[in-house]
Length: 481
Image 1 (cartoon, rainbow, N blue to C red):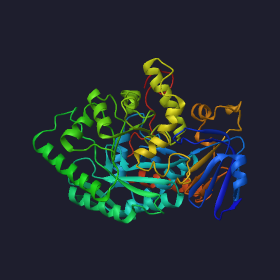
Image 2: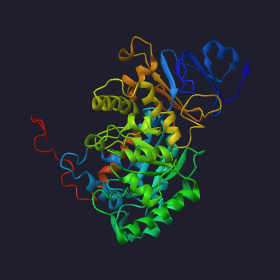
Image 3: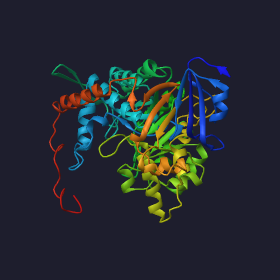
Image 4: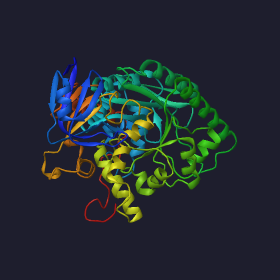
């Protein structure tokens, strides 16, 4: 028996490895030393081989890789449900993110966002630093620093996507010192400089758990032709963005692709490739599916998002063409959550209903989309996304000792069809136990929730809140708003 320091032995679990052989070990164990997985196998074998500092009995639990979230937004977690009935949601995002937010707002949001991911077993996710219609807080690096501070404290892996906001340029921002507001404009070049400062100050901090990605607002030539000077200006902004991506070897992500936009970005902006993760991607052309396959461009599918109600991401067609597709939450607002189990279930139902065929997107495939395929999209599949010897010890334990899981068998089907985020018992990242018995070890979750409530109320005091809390006509008793 080998004695290992700073070691953990997880035993007696139903281990879903998602390794190249897709092994499911019904009485399985995992040996961990420091931040790495030493071994994965039968409990009897590993118990004899390793003498660990800590032994975790995973009886009646599924042991699996931490989940991946391929698309979300920072800022949104404090805006849940607001404005969704009378459509001032985008206005609230725009007003708060650019004019009404402070360092404290972004810290409170980041803490709540990453806490929710942690509690639900998502050990790695990406978040655009803003949203609405691509309103990014890139006037000053201090705001992103606060986000990264809190992400590092919570302890899960995170990618913060920063870059140019949507037009107009120069863009108007506001800074608050107490109750005093100062307005100013920020040019494209200044936003690019801030983006690079954010990268320099935050990329790979927290022992590599906090990383930065680059984003660009998705152009929409399908709405109105982009020609002449408008196209020249867009190509200039795209080149600035590509240059940063290449200089620092970062992921490039874009929000809200639909018919024709991937083709446009490939042909006009030279934006495609394995470093790219494009979200939503609804109603794609057959040519665009082929382009993604040929260039290695990744797609983030968000089955619970509004975009997926008004259009369909052709996930089965993309997968059959050889495209890598990762599951995304689209954040915790206005009407969804960071519960990736919920999105896995929604994904299966969504596409099966479309094809009127219950065979589409088997449980194993949607679990791959939320683990190893997500790791591939983040270019981390050599480190995380599966339980294999030599990979990082990013592991979650799902408590199956509950009525909705019994009888205990077929654990992959059980976690994809029946689990929800509240069934996650233990979360380990880099070999560090962040949560056990649903008790978070890294932060005070109740203090985080109190801070979130306080910062939202302060932010709302700085903007026009007309309609944000209104319940629309026909909310009760009718079939449609």
